[in-house]
Image (cartoon, rainbow, N blue to C red):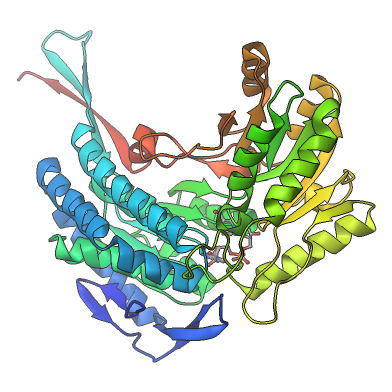
Length: 477
Ligand code: NAD
């Protein structure tokens, strides 16, 4: 039913050498699924040594042969999608259909990077010096330390592992201890596809202990992290000590600007689907709804009706549209956001409380006329909460949309091309969705600006993140 949990070091599945570990909890039942081993310092050192040897072998493996292995892993993940998705729902909570889609997207990411790794082209620059040939070559940056969160247990490891491997790097990944089984299943696919020992290693432990040990090691040349802004800043500071390259995919607080020329029924359907996907625990989740005066009331009413109609329950049960929150911390956090907003004067249009007394279920919630000073208008809610505010003119709403330190995703809905162009130009955001929320694909760059981080995953930018540039000038002797 659930994945067998182990670490993967130097091509061997293993337990931690000092017996430490923790239970993985099913958020729909609050029951333990399995025991996860933690790495002791000696295990992390073995993983580092393995990644160093793995890199030496993988970097000289031809891009053609690397492609065959990574591509095959993608095929195996597709074949195993039902089982992996089941593991994902059990440990993370999202409904099975969403979990399966995430696993298929991850297979796509592996296959896209398998191919793209064959196109890490250099170039020849005409020389000023007669007889000299000037070459720019792209080389893998080196062993990578990757840290991934619990909200997308398949896609976040897939982006990091596939990007690193496609570029010729080796990798040590520490997936979230709360959702370890999905990454383990994907790494089994890489092993079964013929990946040499040491090229990918999987470890678990106490996050700050593992990250400090790995990032401080001279073996690691690149750090990639998806998670919260405070942790991202801490890891970036640590990486800076060794002048190591970083990619930081951090939090967001996506504004959604709805102009009064839209079809409210159509837009509320799109926005509700986007908002409550993965119970809102998505870094690009639509989170601050600014709706133009004329359609504000009908937007709030229709959005609330559609939110209230969502079927919430165990993600493995047929027909469910939203699962539980992933952990107890999230339930406490969203309760805090709701009570603070209401205390500040917001209206509660629907939801606002836990469902049942077992599992971390929380009702899809809409908060109406939320004042600027409410915490939810300033901090990432990371839950099934949709705060709404009316606006009257373009300048005011853009000031609010850009007024926070975040800059990951932003959305706008309008039937005017002129407005669409103006709003997408004005938004300070790494990702902009106009009239829809589909902003992430294997072949498109994904990443933020401002405190939401730097660097992109996905697209040619995602391969670039694992390559360094070498200039060679060669004079005929
Ligand atoms: P958190 O800040 O403790 O952890 C966030 C993630 O970072 C987790 O996966 C955790 O395992 C990992 N982590 C924590 N400390 C680490 C360290 N020192 N080294 C390496 N990894 C470390 O918070 P949380 O309670 O898990 O989530 C709270 C907030 O984090 C959310 O409200 C959201 O803002 C943010 N978050 C963002 C994303 C994203 O996709 N960008 C994903 C998960 C969480």
